[in-house]
Image (tube, rainbow, N blue to C red):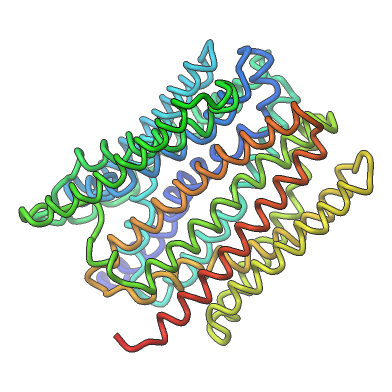
Length: 471
């Protein structure tokens, strides 16, 4: 009787733990998007340039991407609960710093710090779910996790628009960061009381030099994309990008040398020799390049070209989010029967949605928020078909012994590609908008996004062929 009662208590408690860690994941996801609808207000208040606005979003993703594997390994060394609490506390404090920033440069630095603390917090979420749900309840737990991921983006737009519009306490855009203060404190207290400490993994080591080299290289590539337009695309900008590429190449050489010395590199080098995985990773890069940058350019168009206020602009994405969640629920069953064809269908649907949006923008002088929301439903459904099963399809060829490294490399690629897309498409939009009009800038950006999705389709088909070849 006693053992059965204890098991029932533990089973009930783990759902409370799920709610806590998923709330932290939700907070991170919201902050990836909440800034978008506040960009015009931030620009006016801080006198920030268009390049700085792009950097506010991109640097958050770069800081997170370069340290996510390190954050996961810190959880292995010191325990997931300890690192999770440290990450949430750091994320809460750096959010307050973002809200207190007095210049565009300071806000960029605060967002970098926010992204790096997220890299401590977020990897512990999946690690905790893996430990607590090894049984039949695992599917339900990860379904909840997936729905939360899908809703975080739309919630970010809606909450951001609402907070900027209400101007609570006269804080204006700063409220979008201050709101993380009470939310973070609630998560910290609840996690300290309820979340169990997972066992540590002996022998795990850190590759901090590798993380630093990768960060510097990525900043050398993406930084010039962010600030190139503002600096007139001087020749040294291109040299800086080339230097960033060389540093990334140096990172790979360093990783190989570290592995040869018996160290533990950030990435499992065996994965680089897996053609199916590498082609799949290329598809991931193309897909996420087009994903978050799409939300940036459509938000800029609505608020700067159409002068739609923050709240209606944020609410435009709610039907898209609903379509995303519905498609995510459908995609798992469809992927079992159709495999990667579901991913290709999702990309085709997104391209059709982008084409419909382009036609609407080209033929309607000032599309209303309701019309834009209706058109974006197709894009949201296509994204939902791809997002949920994409990781499983790409990681299918990875051996169980390399699953952790493969997942880390997948997560890093998604964030780096998102940051690169924001830098490239943001710079393109601001340049064309200044030279011509917001409408023309959006149409060109949509064409680039469609081309990136075509690249995703090509690489998915190539990955599928490689997976069919016996190893």
